[in-house]
Length: 400
Image 1 (cartoon, rainbow, N blue to C red):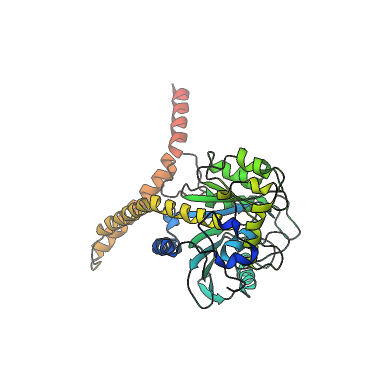
Image 2: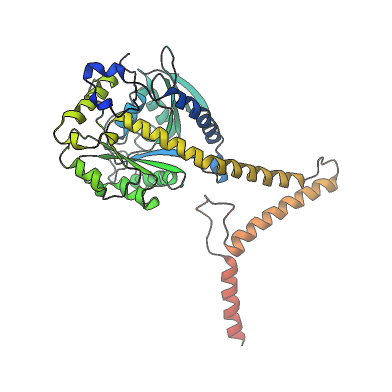
C-alpha cells in the first residue's frame, strides 16, 4: 500500500498490530458500503437540490470543535488526505466531505462549489481547498456559510458524508470581524439544531471537557446527548486522567467516546494507525481504556453505523414529506387553467395568485403565524390582530 492508503478494521483486535503489520488491517466490509452507498447518493442529490429550503431536513454528521481541538486531524485520518493547516481558523466555510470506498488505480478527488467542478489530487487538495475557500469567503480571515463539497474516491476509506464546520474561537485575531464568535455560532447552530443531525464533537484530551464551547453548543440542542458522539484527540499528550474522564462522562455524551492518536509530522497514515494501536496497547494509563472505544478504525466503524441507522430511521419520513410537498404543489397547479388563451383565464389565474398572497399576509400580519417562512428571522413577530384587539379594548373604555 502507498503512503496515503487508509484501511479501517471492524475487528477490535486491531490494537494488537505491530507497526510493520499495519498492511494486514482489513477495510470496513465492502458489501456493507455497497448497500449504504446508493442511499447516500440519494441523500446527497437531495442536498444539492437545497431541499432543506423547503423545511425538509436531511440526516447529517456534523463535525464541531473548539479551535485547535484537532478537528482537521481527525478528518485527515478518516479520509487519508491532507487538509489546510495553519494559525487561526483553517475551515472558513462548511466543508461537506463525501468519502467513497473505490478500488481505483489512484484516488479521485473533486471539489464542487459555485456551480464549478474542480478535479484535484492528494498532493494539491489542500491548496485547492484554500483557493475555493478564498472564492467563497474572501481572501482574508472571515468566514462564509456557503458550503464547499469535497468528494474523495479512494480505496479503503469508509463510505461517509460529514460536514466540517469552522473551529470555535472567542477572540478575533487581526483581520477577523469583531463578531467572529457569533458568526461561527450561528453557522454551527444552523447545522446541529435539526434533530436529524448527528453531532461529532471533537475534544482535546488536554482540556477540561466541561469548558469546551463545542460542548456548550451541542448541549444547547441535545441536552441528553442522544445524538452526540465525542472523539477525544491528543490522547498521547495528556494521558493522565483520560480513562476517568471518558468513563465518568460529566458532559452527557450519549453516543459515547472514541479516543484517538492522530498522525504526527510526516508519518504515513498507515504508520500512524500502527503507532496508535501500539500506544493504546502498551501505554501504562491509556491501555486501561476499553478497546472498543479507542482508535480511528473504531471511530470510522461507529460513524458508518450511526449514519446508516439515522438514514434508515429518517428516510421514510423524508419521502413522506417530499410527497406531501409535491402533492400540495400539484394541487395548487391544478387550480390554474391549462391554457391561458383568454383574458378572463389570465385574470382568474392572477386573482388566484393575489388570493394566495393575501392569505400569507393575513397569517403574518394578523395572526403572527410564520409557518410558511420558518427560516426568515427578519419579519416582525408582533401579531397585528392582538395589537388591534388591545387598541379596541382601550377605545371602548374611553368611550364608555
